[in-house]
Image: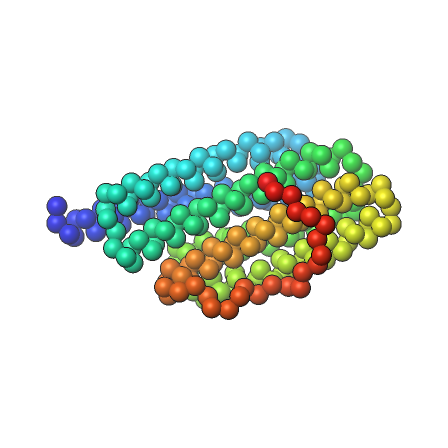
Length: 237
């Protein structure tokens, strides 16, 4: 088998894997928006769809991992190609984690559906979710286009999501101080807001992987972050 044929086979296999990553990204973006809508409208069926759909996201990541292992074993990629392959793994891992956060949102929406609504919270969390989905979509576009400028833009937008989270935290704290009966609902809403903020961190991680893929170096400066508030604890997924 000549070298040119091997290169063509590698490119073909890599394209197939990258197509799976893009499919995974679309599934995760839909899960975020559905989870946010389920929370705002108290739609139990939509929340259940998000929870069930996370299994497909997990399965797709597992398939990507298996295909990457096969690609490395069969094609013995060069150093630059190996960097691309490893980036694929990291992007898929970030997307899988985002899917977990979306599932967690859907779980909490069922609990919140049994409680007195906190005025405006659902709409605010939906707007925050849409901002994160935009970041993920652009980060994936930056990956496919090897667009460092777009990746940097995504990275900078993480600050906006942090600011939205900080504003929501203060809002929930006010509701809790005004009426202790709001404490349980606001705690759940806080955890949801924190999960969405973490989704933004993963979108930023994908953007940073794009920068590394294209330039060979991770960004030197720390990612821009808004001033953080003192949190009341973070629950794992």
